[in-house]
Length: 328
Image (tube, rainbow, N blue to C red; front, side):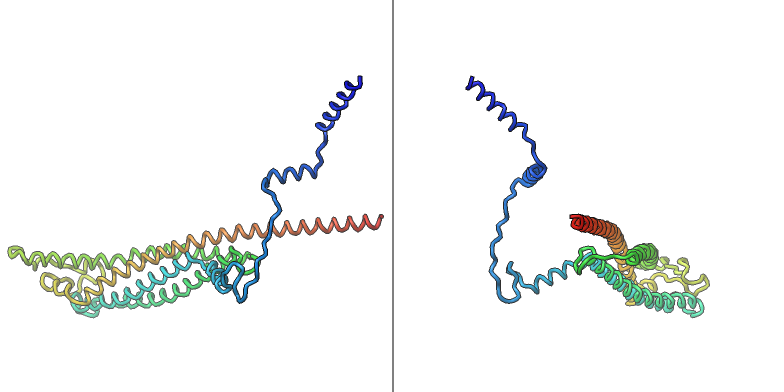
């Protein structure tokens, strides 16, 4: 009987061990070990202090500061600014000189009477003044966009203290997006307009090449090949002579004014295209920065609400402890 009773007692003890209730702290400890299987106490090794302005990692403090500053540079905005400045400089500088050479060619070879091309001269002079304004405006606008890129990059990366953004800053970023879009559309028109004189000068140059090729063939006279500037609409139909033929046209193509104006118009057109690309680049940068600022402002509002709720919870807990102490 005694061995049977001992066996029954052992079985009851085993069942009681199997039905043992696991407490909540034990569950939390098990969950922690399940999530972090290699949860071992960290061992910190003493790092000897070094002399001078050198950090424990062996990197100079000045170098670390430079790396931090370089991390806040908006490289995309910097590239877009350089491209914008280069494009505007090429368009304005080359376009101004090319327009002056075009007026000289018209006065000497296609419109000897000043009254015939007076309107064209006034329009070209007005365009030169507009070029001065474009250069000045885009110099300032490029600097402003670069500064806005520095501000947004530093704010998003939180390089200079706690991140803070305001509704005014987001509104200014949105305004730059809209203004850059409008300027990009306008420069598309400028790029198309700058291709017109390139097309005209190319037609004149190709006609001169045809005349040179015909000089080798004696049977075909070159005097019958002409270029009439009046058909382009830049001078009236009563302008004298209005056209150039044969050797006269070939002499025009050999002048320095024609050579310089033709190639300067090509460079000006390329500068306008580079400006369009720079504005598109700026538009993408500003749009992404505006989206980052918008998301960051929402995250900031969420953190403020969370901090406020935590403070209220701490106040409630402190008041409950004070009441409990007063009761006891």
